[in-house]
Image (cartoon, rainbow, N blue to C red):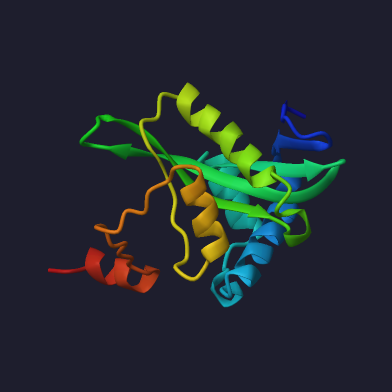
Length: 167
């Protein structure tokens, strides 16, 4: 098992393997409950295995405190045509509520920023729900800037299919 060293005693980030798939799915459901979106989780152990471990579409790190899983980080690389380089996209960072406020989130950001920097990424981006003031304040304390001039648009699976069949 590969661990990433941290500055907090008892806290570690570790790489994942296929045996972690049930844990990853459980943590995804926990963040979905926090974000009031559990009804939108359609991921399964099979889809996670295919996407993360077979197709290498994302990376997942498990946060552990004294050997117990307390959260996860899921990220992937995107690309900026203007910069002509890869960027680091943080899809999820989740820490169980009882472990928040202990510097773990800041330490995770330090570590993943190190990964992004080492990979030559010129940007690190993520989204945050507008009502999530604790996270917004935390991100701003790191120097993150909201991209208010950009609006995220999304096509769901049904509309992707419709667009793909347009004449």
